[in-house]
Length: 95
Image (cartoon, rainbow, N blue to C red; front, side, top):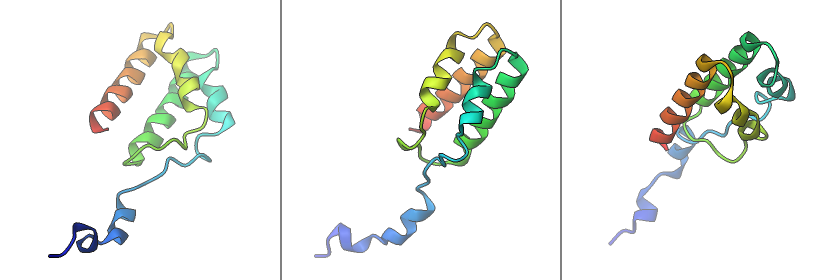
């Protein structure tokens, strides 16, 4: 009887596992997320959405991103709050 471990080709897993690139989640992006101008915060949030949507699995290699996104949940601009909630909901369903 062949064990399951021997019947799986582990090389194909590299096609499915992606690490969120910490270079794309830069200090500049973190400062844009905290900017006073809501349009700058929106553009930064759009960049975060693009990065997160490109990865299939999110690992713990996302640096300070969770702490930078936390204030956006209580942002004065409802568009930003809705955008972040949509991102979080979408990714939580995938996880």
